Image (tube, rainbow, N blue to C red; front, side, top):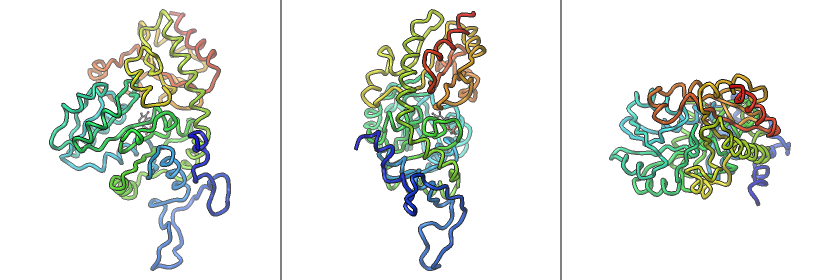
Length: 379
Ligand SMILES: *Cc1c(COP(=O)(O)O)cnc(C)c1O
């Protein structure tokens, strides 16, 4: 079966009890036990809920994994995965992570005794150099946020395996439709399902997938024990969002690609960051490990004034935090997703006040380009 078909037919699309073509929302907290000596499959909905389970199995199937877990947000998913580590453990992480992940690592997990070293993950040798006796994990994002940097995932996995590290990736930007990290040897794939998986800017959620049973047990222990589970209504929204994943990703990617190529030729643009451009540093590596470049891109304008004028004058683009929705979203990393990163660190990474990040939606691409151009040529 081809992947696009599997999105709709993976064994989790109909309700086993009724045959309903949409999994019912099991709005329930607890389950009657017929026989106290033989507990049923479900006992309490934090531990398991049929709507959540259908979503968890679906994402596991689509990521090529075995075990899926749904959390109350992308950050709950990230934090619950990080909670499998212990004081004294050391994690190597890519330096241009999602701002919230950077924050929880540096200002929360570090205080619980987890050590982190940030590296430029476009250079896999930097991973090897950062390994210590107590290193337990490698945490990556590829493409990264907001500069769309690429890590050679196969090469990173090789190094990690040699040092017995658990490999973790935040796969939010690609969705399983374009990139399946578990197939490349990554141990744990995480999504902010708020973005492409939900796809409609109407739900906050997080998903985690692994095929390693030892890690699955630890993650489930945190999910059930710590309890940051996703509620059944939100699970249902994600389950529904997934059904149109292919259609959305294909069209949104086409638009992102057109916008990237168009931006490259504008005199008010300094640089465009999109892994689908042949001129992108990571183009070849990305093309070898993913089936598409996705719908997120960023660009630097020649001056801050141009960037601000674009953001103030757009009518079709939503100026907002987030990405991956059916509506096009424009964001300003310095003031939004990366506001929690120290200014000095941002500057070092090239996250400047001329940088705009775009997430292409389903509007007609010509309208999207005209909408950006209006503000740019006013200056
Ligand atoms: C949005 C995002 C997150 C956090 O997800 P929430 O659902 O907002 O908690 C994590 N990683 C990436 C790459 C994101 O874009």
